[in-house]
Image 1 (tube, protein in one colour):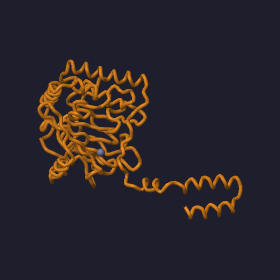
Image 2: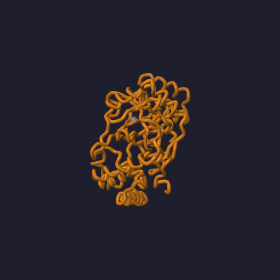
Image 3: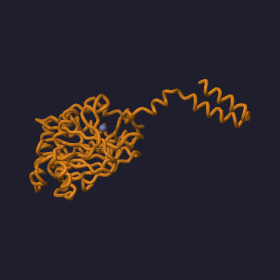
Image 4: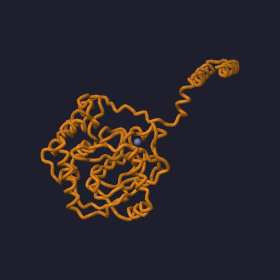
Length: 320
Ligand SMILES: [Zn+2]
């Protein structure tokens, strides 16, 4: 602090007025910031998750109850026409077993979307999950095939997350914002959140994911989830070919929209097997990406750009 006290006394003698004193106090405030703050600012951005907690309101309670009731109605009469009718129900099926087991679904300050998905999860048996998966296959089989079975790269990326800072069950693929995001397999778009708004609690089914797409891959019983996009170019019920554009890289979502974040595609894969959904860990995800980066994938991406999204099947969610 020696340097700043010399500056202080020089300033004092030069100004010596009340105005000077105000300036001096402002300056002192700047200089007396602990070095800590400087170091924090210069550090590589760390994904320190923001709290998803909210200020409870009666409107939130009504909304949570409505969405859970809607999902329950669909579950009671689950069929090929309403299977994608609630994005929260789709999310509840998608999230790997145990993900929301300990979530405080009744706490009024807890994240409302997770409260909805958690309450629906609690009502999902492995039988109802199995039925859900059978219906997705039924929808797929009754539609015209959309391209051959093959794999494509989700995005052209410069680097991927790894090490202790990265996700256990996901991978961040760093790419320019606006880069096109491609379906890695053919399949059915089961969820397409496109209206992320930081000011709105219910603009998407995941405030962390932002604008996100989940595609069901019927050839492997897998789900692929693409997050933080700026635009989403498919809807729930769209059938996509491998390599087809689903959106563009952006920085939507609570953490991704913070300064220094964004500029990446958050990509994750969950697998369904015998009544259970399991998350693919990041090591295996990395190995899968390596496989997909075959010479054929560039061509696959080009073909994907040419093909227009096809809408062969309307979901019940279209009607509101
Ligand atoms: Zn991520």
